[in-house]
Amino acid sequence: MNSKNQNRNNLIKATTFIIAICILAFICLSSLASKGEVNQRPLKVGFILVASRYDYGWNYLHDQGRLYLEAHLPGQIETTVAENVPENAEVERVMERMIAQGNRVIFATAYGYLESALRVAAKHPEVIIMHAGLRLDPLPVKNVGTYFADPHDPIYVSGMVAGMMTKANKIGYVGAHPVPPLLVNLNVFTLGVRAVNAKAQVKMVWTNSWHDPGLEVEAVNSLMETGVDVIFANLDSPVSVLQAAEKNHLYSVACPADLDKLAIKGWLTGAKWNWGPLYVKIVQSILDNTWQRSDSRYGAKEGYVQLSSFGASVPKVIQRQALEVWQKLKDGKFIVFKGPIKDRDGVLRIPAGQVANANYLAQMDWVVAGVQGSLPREKKPVK
Image (cartoon, rainbow, N blue to C red; front, side):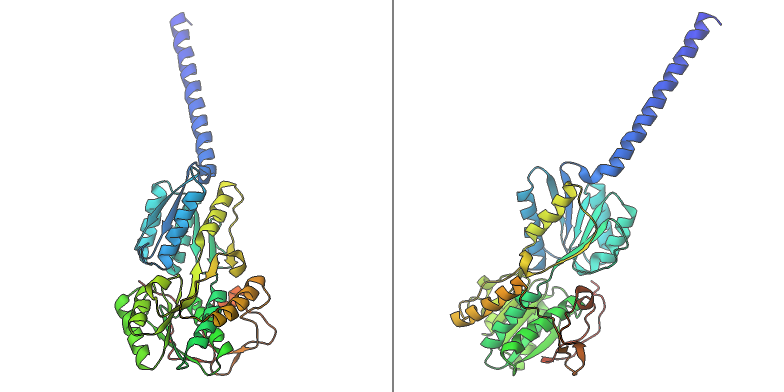
């Protein structure tokens, strides 16, 4: 073999070796990337909201939690937010877009996002999706977790205050959808009312929308015609209900935000979420590689849900009584959903001494004694 051919063969061998090394390096780097994308720095975290982040309700509080997360993990995370995303196929498109933009953690904060979250997560094992609200046990997709801070305890105390403040013994409830989480809230509120005022009745009205100001004002007006003097707003944004109640000289209670500034004369109290510390806890576990899928539920003792401020119209003696019960709830010395508890038809739903667990509450489809009005059957809200 002449030197010319020998050189050509050596060049071919060298080129082949270099190409093989490059391919091997590419495979190794790709493997590392697929395993460690949630460990990118800064970690990109997306939030999806069903309405405006300025609604002074559910979506506002989640966005406040996002801002808290940014402030407490500076340099480690970047967040983005998508607002007004309906509970249909659109949310999947938003999730896919967020993933394409590099988000490796997504907080899906609406009740109706869960099915979409499961489908998208199954296609993107490198992404962690956290769903707020709907309990799902066992979790079928390894990179999906659920979380919620149950507002039962502050709502129970709010019901006590409403029961002590009503003079008509007629209280109105304006709810979005008759789904288990809101039925739980209605029941626990009524239990609080009746614990201090056995004569009081709670009249329920459903708007079948998470946020529709026109329907909400109509609901307040229809309840006022029945003689109620207190209104409990349980919607994404309670603003319209509180303003209508204030205009008509009614007392008001709200979940999920502290809105005493909107109802100076009529505000009593309510329940509010404090999502920020929980978001830090979840994201920090992802940064630390300790995150595990779970269906996590929290209560008053963790501080992720709180009792709202008392309005100026609430006498100090009532405030003290309410705070005493609130402390017992936080300490675990008093449990609201402990039997015996019957529904309004007299059927024993929670036997004596038994405590309703999260799985039971997640399927609640009945109301307690003291609740008036029709209960439409709606398994899932569609927007």
